[in-house]
Length: 291
Image (cartoon, rainbow, N blue to C red):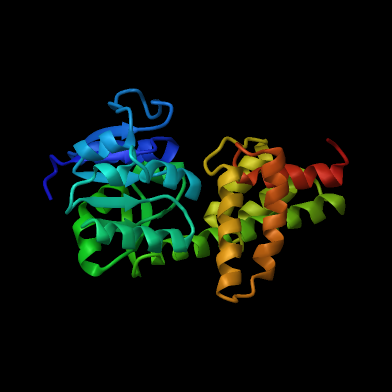
């Protein structure tokens, strides 16, 4: 795969623009489409429709918020699939329902395309530094074809299995991440309600090994009251919803993750565009009896 290949991004927000910067450093050329025609740092050229992007690009990477946005960008007369040529490579980094990824791979195969579901583990700091973990679903041959792209945006590629497996693994990871944050927030809630001094409590949790590095980062932000979005609540709650839906389909009991989803649903209602660690603010407000 030539490093002169043109990569077209559908969706060019916080994560995609950072991935794009690393791909540009690796020698790829970039073009992008967003419904608003905006995104990134202003240096990337935008085209008017997903179809126009697909007609021009050698590789298409989709990074959109949810299943609905994925369908809007891929399907229809102006969609990506209407513009891609047989033999093209479509990499979907969006976190969507596993059944959506399986159906998209089948649709792509019928059109002569290679489609890989490749959501990533990591937030904007990892995207910026090129340290994402790529969770890829597809055949070994398909993953190999996309590996140079994955190497440019991440530190590790995990071949999770056939089509849809990357989406399933992403839901496992995000479910653990969301449920664990909910438990840490409950611990803080108890400590504050029981009269522990706030700064001491946050600093103590930051010092003990039972808290993961990711959640220590969230604790630091919560202590400072800084919920700048690295992973917005609306996306985390959406991922938890996808997990519970497919979990029910698989008859997998997920009681702790279901309970965490309720807390994140409340957080989304109050802080949809702030980081999902705003759950700490919701829980603190309850025990402090403040708005």
